[in-house]
Length: 472
Image 1 (spheres, rainbow, N blue to C red):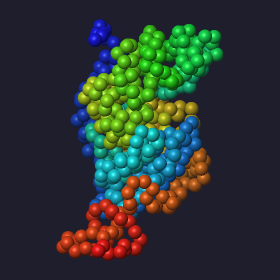
Image 2 (cartoon, rainbow, N blue to C red):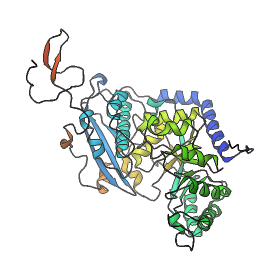
Image 3 (cartoon, rainbow, N blue to C red):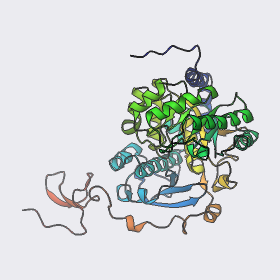
Image 4 (cartoon, helix red, strand yellow):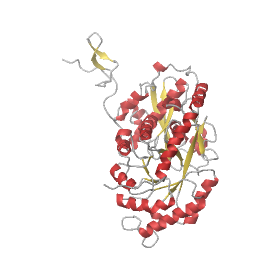
């Protein structure tokens, strides 16, 4: 067994200490936040009768931006609707095929509704659909009960959230440094750089036949990091991402080469499913490791990473990892293990604000991503929420209005649609497309034990438009 000497104060321990101090600091303001929450609570929506609320439809649209933003809307029989968002560049049909498992359900029974669609959800496009539905259900519930979504998740531990911004790469260290310096001049205080191995593939002997950097190539990659450090300074947190397809041993080589540059983390070295590989990497370097944006679910994706302390930080995405409830579960468990959480986000303001509601309640929160710095009309997509969403100092405020606290700006959205049509009907998805059959009517025993044909409170076992033959 190999033992590592403990450093007096490593970056890893600093990250954990920062998360702990954030949680501790929130305790001092907790009573203030509770008072604020009580003052900002609204009475229930007078136009809704919660016990009789039913989902009547699911519709969607896709906004074309730096990525595609697939946004869904859950409609109800009482005029209250909820917005949700699927992971960027995925497709709406992944959510629409679940329509028959949503229509007729009470959206306030959030956990029951989600349990009904979880069996159709795996890591991949279906995880974004599940996540979007979770967000839309919370938006509805918040509107009906007159409270912000964060109140449905827990206590509000902070009102403002630090953001990190992504910056696309360049092979020239000085040019890359200038790009990142512009981010700093825009007010951001936490940065992430795309460090593709192909940035140095034009250098002689820099990349091998597997598109992995050689020692010479790693030297050039480190020169790029140095160029960014020269531009923004050493006091600013700087993370790195997009290294290509690496083996565990390749990742260890990269991580060790990055150690002198004091990275906040190195992201997604290998497949997020390979917790054993991550544990090897984490134990072999002082560069903090992070993964999680591509994982779905606590049990399905994050549990092994966390229980085996395979990474230094986790990186769930609210619109991909399971929505608000599941990400809250994941992050709370990580907090119990002393593992900080950075939250990935590369979507529209719907996903960004939904993430803010989650982050406000996390004890181990470090930073939330913002990936649309260069899209001038990004904030105009929505109305209702206080503007600017992203403030001049690189922070984001947490809304206190009911639900998510925003609505789509129809005029702006229509200018940037990937496909024509604004929340068009989805009637072709009315019939079941996955799973079992639709809900009744069907033959069953009534309360008196008599065989009858019709509906009861149970899920149907046999859908039909006409009564089936009487059983013999």
